Image 1 (cartoon, rainbow, N blue to C red):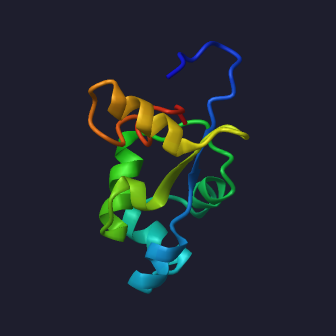
Image 2: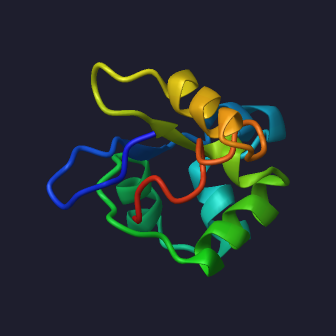
Length: 108
């Protein structure tokens, strides 16, 4: 496992609530109403034009969608890297399997 250095491509987190919204029968307007966010804010999340998300907003989205954080936010590793490789090395170093695959890869 390599350490992050400023300027490194550390991958990115993407927001994709579509499947959960479809299962719940929610429209964008319905999600905005339930999560108490503005339509423009949801649009920016969908376009992945945000640099950070507060825990408050993430909690409200998860509450409104009745889902887990990892159901709507997904980590994409840098081009050419496999996310499974990072998970295997973390597990090999005595941490829980999968640790490091979704938490803290990139601040929004």
